[in-house]
Image (cartoon, rainbow, N blue to C red; front, side, top):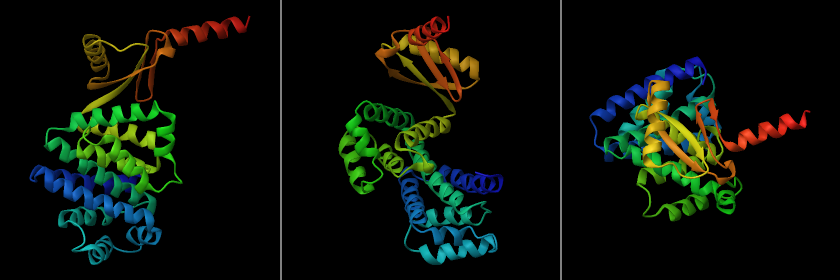
Length: 273
């Protein structure tokens, strides 16, 4: 987002945080559904996106237009949150869409946090991404942009039935819709990171040839926490092709100590002789 859009989103996000502190998780979930339903509407209706982000209109006018359209059709708190969103200045209609969708996601995460389930939701999203990426047929079926999203969402719900919390399932549905213009796998990754961020944690993606023991994972997490000055949530991927060692990615930082990397470096050095 550009600066004006970031500031407008920040105001709405602060409004959400204030609301969450005094609301029951079930009420926050209801508001989240309203926010995400309007985000879906904005995705389908580019003319509405333009009208609600038109700089020639005052913020009060845009909020009034939104209220006239949606009052009585979505949760009152969701409408109030959306009014604070559209009342701000937006650099582009697409950024208003991103803001509405992000606000809905943050509401879902806030509801999980209030229920004491946010850590589990974070882990469930990551594990589902691992399952999907490990099966090409499943990955293709869920990421197929031609297939109706309702069909793909039904498949995801079937796979997650009895294995994941309702917030996790809803977030997977958001990812299927291309959260923030990302691919399905990219959207899942971003949602994992947003869940960790709400818990004031950084995500470390760790690739190993064989699973780390609980103690080794704890030590690695503690070392990374010391480096980054923030609690680190370790997400393991087991890939026998790396042969041994550990690869760690935190944000844009990559620490690759795998045997595969060393072999590739040796091979490249020999090829230059």
